[in-house]
Length: 195
Image 1: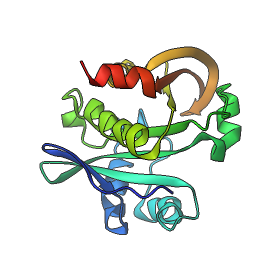
Image 2: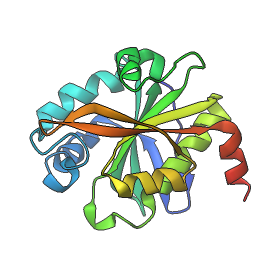
Image 3: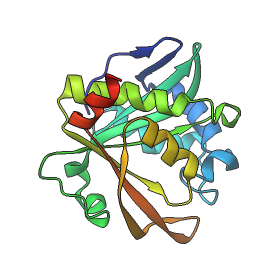
């Protein structure tokens, strides 16, 4: 787990997740609209499920940094990052080399009424700034379901580019789904950030 201070962009902030966030996460991760893109509608999570999954991460037993996004002081989403080398089997599915120690991330906006408002792109930029400038990452890679166009647009606006389509990369709601491997690197991100 990489320690993160609160990351701030005006009315949006990313802060470390706390146990007090488990009830909010359970509400988000039992909403079929959220689950249709993150986790699957066939896998809703209760508060106990959330605690079982995320408490080891908060305790440092699983090497994933968990963040909660707040917009105007209200919790609105979740973002996590990690080193791909700690999850080599998952990296292998995507045919992602871990030689240069790339980081990975996953995220969602837990309040569907805020989808399409640009918060996802802003969350991504905050964490990319942190990973590239503070942590020293050279590359950040993630995967997006091939039919999740909204997420792909947010990732591209934040500096990610599609690298390859990976067939049957993830089973989501009982169906093997194709995913785009998308990558942002420090050099191209720095150019984007100065525009």
